[in-house]
Length: 260
Image (cartoon, rainbow, N blue to C red; front, top):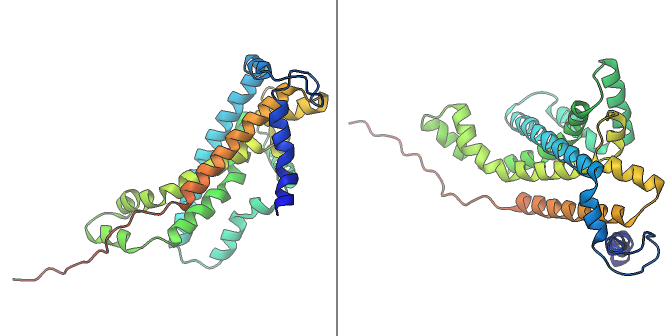
């Protein structure tokens, strides 16, 4: 396991180290410098691609959180035939190769004649991000004590009020964890984005991919190092939120009123 982890992470460590290389050639070390990070933040096209990626990640993660949470709550409450099949279909985008999803989105958007750009990117990223929120929220709901919501209903709360005041706060860590995973997946995606992006819409992963084809410079290494650190932070935060224990609440005892 140690050997496998070394083979996986040693190239990433080298990318981070060579992002401080003074030479323009990534394979030759001539000294340490911060100049490539300074040039990176002065690159207008790179900053524009970063802004597009941030907008795309936030929009798709919020949309996926809304749809995935509603789907998880609906599946946990509804007693329908084929519920397990529906759950399997809902999580299918995780198992499908990205090249297939990209071709499907390309064909679908072309069929409905939707212009390629930020809107098609948001729809595509939302679609493959929904399963992450759905699975986390559904797991949280399965371990939640149903008596809390039932007590709220007995005290006069409507179904919507019980959901907003009881269920939603209890599943909030899972929702946030799913959103963070969706943000990380959106920043990481290249294949699907290449199929559905427009001519005037460029994202950061696509920008890095095009630069790699023309030659890797320490500025590209600096950008990859920053993306790696941001992804690690989001993954750690998502894992911590997903494993956080819900606050202990005393058991609810309903005492029937006595008639006088």
